[in-house]
Length: 257
Length: 219
Image 1 (spheres, chains in turn orange, cyan):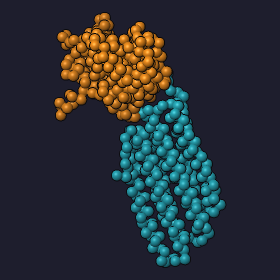
Image 2 (cartoon, one colour):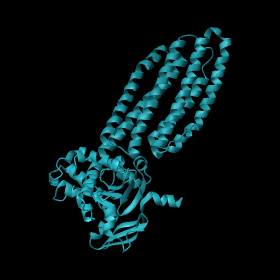
Image 3 (cartoon, chains in turn blue, cyan):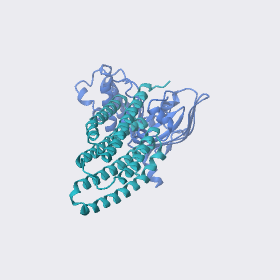
Image 4 (tube, chains in turn red, green):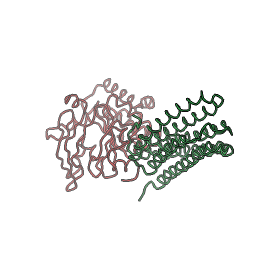
């Protein structure tokens, strides 16, 4: 039985602690992240949710004075191990941010960027990857006639989907999303949410969101963080109908946090 | 700072409306049994006519609940408060319908002399009303223990119902010209038994409201 459980999880975080200098920002986090599921992380500002998601691809290492203890096991390998190949890790664990941040290049070059730096040079291979990635994010029909146009000319929602396509082009198995719709209008937001539901057929998705309805709509499991602690982690339907911890109830009903 | 002051105030209004509806239904039920005993035709007609007031209150509660769901995106305990208000308002409406049914039985019996003094039906009604009162108090105070006490009394009501109906059926041969009255009295017993069932349902909704878990009190 134990083995089956291990295989269901892409990440298994054990007793993770993180400090920014003296500030203890993540406290003894134990967190399994299930394969091909959407995991939402919610909590008030400063609770550690963005810090946590940035540990999963070690983006957090760019922050000065960060110190971590514990384990972040990715497919059975502890990524906190000194020998970890960060380029390889980030190829497998892609990330999308709050605001679409396309490079000042063409639509095609944005999506081809990742594969190129990983050594793919053949045009036909690149074409295939770009087309497939753009189709995966339902952007292909909107941009197929202007792949050479600057990515900056796309709308905010299209830019965000382009960034998701860029992340998918390196064929990751995990996609991290840090408030991916907070700068988008409601329809673009719903398009991204629909996309998330489609992408989880192929990818494991971890999403940080301030929008609790978004967490309840798109995720399979939801984690509530508060002051660096993981207060509650459960099926999303359980969290939003009958959470165990009264602090979770207070937060999701808008009375606290 | 209470970030949901307006929502909390609306939830309280919803509960107050429901308690007002429940109060009117309890009054109607008590009056209906009095009309039966006193053969008070006028009062029976009044109960039947006034049922629309209770129906209107149910619609108001439903409308308010739907608007709160649409506007406030309630989850967890808030959502249960609204869903349970919808469910309990439906139970209370059915309770009021039973008051109407009893009043209609009063009309059907009319001024025909009772075959015997009506003693046991009010006793059964008292027990059912105790259950209703307990379940409504449990709702008001969100008291799970009080809600659970309803089930024991329901068994007693069911037992009284069985005995009374058997007794009434026995009268049919003895009073062949008064089968209408006997049948109406048996119906009244049935309405009271239903009242007790609705009270048990209210108690179950209270347990769900507080715990988030389904609980079958008649299991």
